[in-house]
Length: 347
Image (spheres, rainbow, N blue to C red):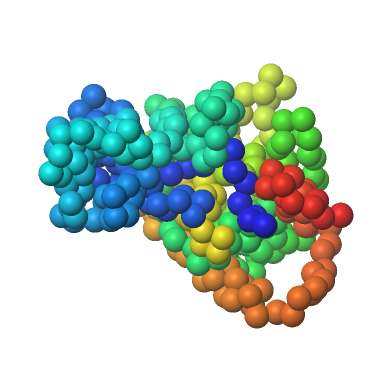
């Protein structure tokens, strides 16, 4: 049985990736063709010609006036996936149409519905409004992961690994030594994990971007909406500086770290990442620093998880993991994902 939940919204791309040319990405085992129409909307359909299965994203296939022409035999499709012309005859077979997918552009992402189109409810797409808000500046990217998407979920819900894997970037001793709190909203299907450090070393990632000297108050508040969207609300301030009673927080720096975790296949993942900040909005040097350093951190995770995927593939059946307190968020996420995928829910 597949571990990938169906009837779900996933991030397929950043909006900037899709233009007036053919673009391909495999999402949840399905090769999908994207392009942006002349009206500016994104269309998504199967990347496989109905005739002889030639990939429509493969040259010499081409886009002509909002229609894609197969580069093998010339079958032509409109932006609704319906075939409009076939070679050597005027009658187009009624069944000559491509599978199409509901898509929504929101918060700089292109979301795609995988599963029964009749169940696609755009109101269920989780929000990440900072990514295109004028009050924030964002850097972002995507890295391919040769590991199952659940490993990335585990990784992001247990940030104690920052101390060991990301030392010199975002990790400090206090991240691993500070206990967490975990809450699960079963009705909404959201996992919350929080770690508040009252007196912590300031890692280079924040010291160099904010200019804070000395020790800090550092909050990490995670909000994970399975299967796809992970948000880390990060607050950094000098030691002892807390939000005001009315909730305003003018003396702190806020960073919203967003991951879209999209399965490519059962054992590979699209790792979309973004870092939005509410300070130094027009400072290109800060943007360059955060982009370079966050990509370095992401690639450290990629290396570790690619190795872990190989380890899991070679271990004997029935191997039992050891879990501890810091794993409560990840274990809760596993249970929700298993239910979404129609699997037996682990204890």
